[in-house]
Amino acid sequence: MSKIVIIVGSGRCGSHFLRDILSLHKDIKGTFENYFVSSILYKLGAGVHSTNEMLDVIKNNCDGNGLKHFTSICMSMGKEIEMVSEQLLSNSPKYMSILSFYENLNYHLFGNVKIIADKSHAYGAILPEILAELKEAKIINIVRDGVATARSMAIHSGYRKVVGHEILPEELPYMFCEGSLENLSDKNPTEEECFIWWKNYVETCFHYGNEIGPKKFLTIRYEDLAMGSADTFFKIAQFLDLEYELQWLDNANSITLPNAFYRQYQNFTKKRYNQIQSSGLEIQKMLGYYFPEN
Image 1 (cartoon, rainbow, N blue to C red):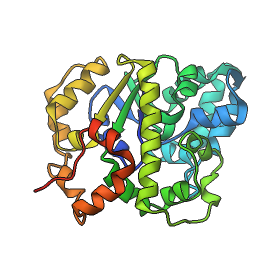
Image 2: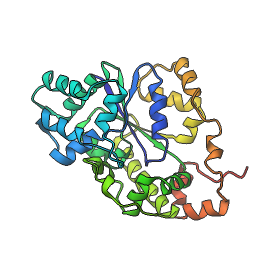
Image 3: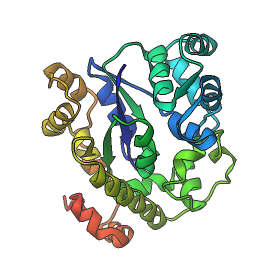
C-alpha cells in the first residue's frame, strides 16, 4: 500500500501549491482536499466500521461551497464515481479499520503509487485523532507569514465564515462533513481577528508537532518553497525517504514564484503590518517573518 503524507497548514498558506510541487515527483500522487478521515470520525467514531457506511460518509463530504470532494477527485482522475464505489465494495472486506478503508480507497483511485500526498490542511489542529487512525502517516506543515495569511483570509469567502463565526481550528476539519460550512452566513472579520485565528492554529499545530517528533513532522515556509529554495526541496526529499532528483527540482522550479516573498507585502505599510501582528510577535519572529524594508 502507498505511504501517506498529510499536508497541513492554516489555510491561505500555500498548501495547494505544496501539493502541486509534491505531485511533480514521479513517486508521489497529490490528492485534492478530502477530509475523509475526519468525516468518518465525526459520523462513525474511531475503530472498525462497515465499508459501505464509510463510503456513504465520504460521498457526502463537501467544501464550503457545497462541492463534493469525492466527486471532484473521481472527475480529476477521469473515473466514474459508481465504478470506483463498486470496485471498492467488491474488492474489500465488509468491515475495515479507517486506515484499511483509506488505503483501499486510495488504491482504487490512484493505483499503486509510492506516496499519497493528502492535502487536508486543517488536520494540523487535530493531529492526535488523525494519527491514531493513520498511524504511519507523515506530516508536512506549511506556514506562511501570519500577516499575509490574515489579509488573504479576510477576503476569502470560506475563512470569512470560519473566523467571523469564531469556529475553533480544532472544529474546522469536522465541518467538511456534509457541508456544515456551506450553511453559514458571510461575515466581515478584521485582519487582526484573522491573524489571531492563524496564530491559534499555528501554535496548536506546533504543539502537536513537538509531541510527534521530527521523524514524522516537518515544517516548511511557503516563501522558501515558492522561491525554489534547493534546501527546502532537499529537506522534503529526506523527510519522505525519496531520491533527491534534479528532474523534480527542475519541474518544481518551472512553477515557483521568485518574487513570492515581496509580492505578498504589496499595499502594506510597515505601520499596518505591525498593527496586525501585534498579538503574535513572538511566533512571527520564531518563523523569521518581518516587514521587508525594500
